[in-house]
Amino acid sequence: MIDHPFFRQALPVIDRLEAAGYEAFFVGGAVRDLFLGRPVHDVDIATSAVPAEVKAVFGHTVDVGIDHGTILVLHNGAGFEVTTFRTESDYTDFRRPDRVEFVRSLYEDLKRRDFTMNAMAMNKSGEWIDPFGGKEDIERRSIRTVGQAAERFSEDALRMMRAARFVSQLCFNLHPQTKEAMTGHAPLLGHIAVERKLNEMDKLFGGRSAGKAVSILIETGLYQYLPGLSGQKAALDRLAGLPLEKLTAEQVWTAAAYLCAEADPVPFLTAWRLPQKRIKRISRSVGTLNRFFAEGITDWQLFQAGLESAVDAAAVASLLPGAKEIDARDAASGFEALPIKSRHDLAITGSELLQWADKPRGPWIKEVLERTEQAVIAGDVQNERMEIERWLRACNLL
Ligand code: ATP
Ligand code: MG
Image (cartoon, rainbow, N blue to C red; front, side, top):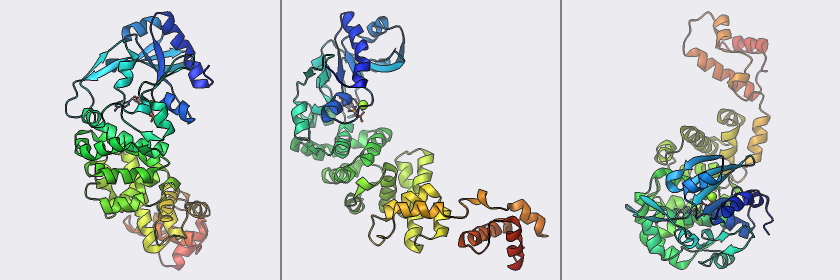
């Protein structure tokens, strides 16, 4: 019996496929996570039915990845990914296969999967199919390829990064032969698209053992084939030595960008093809981090940073030598206590300045607004229209 809501919810899908004469099993990460006692979010189903047959069995389906055999089955208001058993062939350029071949054998499907812990299946009664010793490896906390590691990494070099990110997420170790093959085949990672690397790196940075995983990138030499990290061993050693489990993934990116590209984090983040919004956020946090170190955490620094960047920068700064007194909570409460949080909150705008001063429009407006912000933050003047006007006249700023 399967005692898990997500799996139970998917049982009718398996029942329907079986009733139509096909095999169907739970597979992949959800099965692994169930055995590990980790939270399960979505379950994948593998079946002997080819996509057209899956579509014939169910009324409502969406072709989400039909070339790779994946059909989304909509059932009782939920969606379930159903993928035809397949093998992969014709790996060229050490990347994903050019062609997938549908097969009728679960064993063949499990055999093409990356690691033993990810190559287990479970039937609807909760019985395990574990031909490669996945459970045993999970109990040993060991990440081991299905079959010869060298061969599997030559087929798809991204698997080496997946191994490192699972180290981070699961706090597992690499099986010695798996690690040895990673070390020997690291240059193949050069053939992999940055987008796929980024996807794994985000998961690696977000895992509980990110520091341990960064050490693996260093020890295996994988880092040499990652954007912006080639030749950055010293910086990565520093990163790996930090208690990264205290940081969010975005804060680990901030720490990495700070340590690997202090002068200008933007080219580093751009090389990783991060979306513009994330580049802006992380580079802003790196800038804040630099200012925290140069000038300390002042109210003015917090104001300039904004809440998100102040918190991220303080969280990273608190882990770095020379800034022990800084912590993210202080940054958040310090920011919340500011009399204004942004220029929007200022009681005056540029048009008031134009009205008050008998001067033409010009760059002076921006300067005076900034002086006003500084004075309000410092408590020299209250954030009130008349008070500000009086203060500006007293300071001869109008
Ligand atoms: P997560 O919990 O992060 O989703 P996952 O193991 O489910 O981890 P997915 O990328 O969702 O990872 O892949 C689902 C399954 O497909 C894996 O468990 C594995 O069996 C197989 N798989 C994924 N990527 C590869 C790959 N590059 N090579 C071989 N098998 C793979
Ligand atoms: Mg998954």
